[in-house]
Image (cartoon, rainbow, N blue to C red; front, side, top):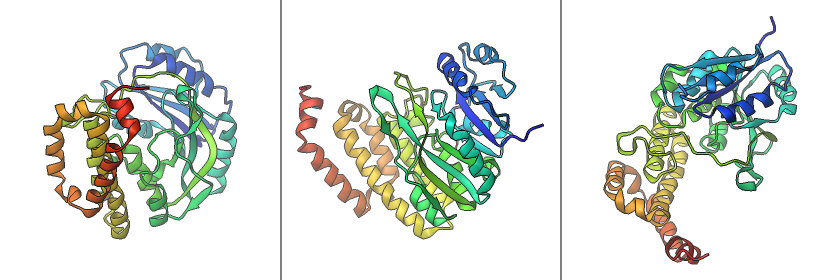
Length: 328
């Protein structure tokens, strides 16, 4: 039996027609050292029926008994995969199949690699935009990789991680943060070399989709991840991850915390100006979150950055024209 080198892992929920297109594309790759692991988060649609219509033994389909949320479903993919490396994509992403031989050759020849991050092209809204521009670099384990990569890659697709470099049980502590792949990346960065590539690993097609990612915390339960409260929830989780998982790198922690202070300031300013209705309706919750995180909002970095962003929006002609007066 051929050894599985690469497991292409697809967490999915309730998007059977889109998943069908993705699988149809993936099976065009005829290699027998890959597998396609599909973790269905208890979809109520025809996902199971459609997946089982494909007659390809490389497809491994698993259906959860209930919807565990996106984070747990990603971890389920790892638990069920057999490959040496995990290639994450979402159910809508289209992989550049021509790069699969190159990726597998890297895995076989660069034994020190724990993670490979490729470039993702966003074709939504008729544009061709690089989501996260990476050059061609190899980073040493620990501080060098963490400083250059941690929280620099927010999208799941295009991330390839060595399966035995991650601790699923440790990662489970952070379920619900929607940054579970960042936890996995951090684990891989600590233990081995990380590589980034300017090659286009995959792209997001030009289609309109409704996000199925919703938040879990009490103050933002069932709100979309991009809502103001959903964003604040992510900021809290990001800070917790930095605070807990990077305790052995105090200098790195300091640098990353300073980055986060600026993000908090930016999000608060954007919420006030770009989502004024939400800010007015939910201001008591936002104030409660800020009060809970006094250690952040009292820093001079946060205060200076918030003042800069506030002034920027306050005197932005574009903002007042488009957001307030609805002039185009």
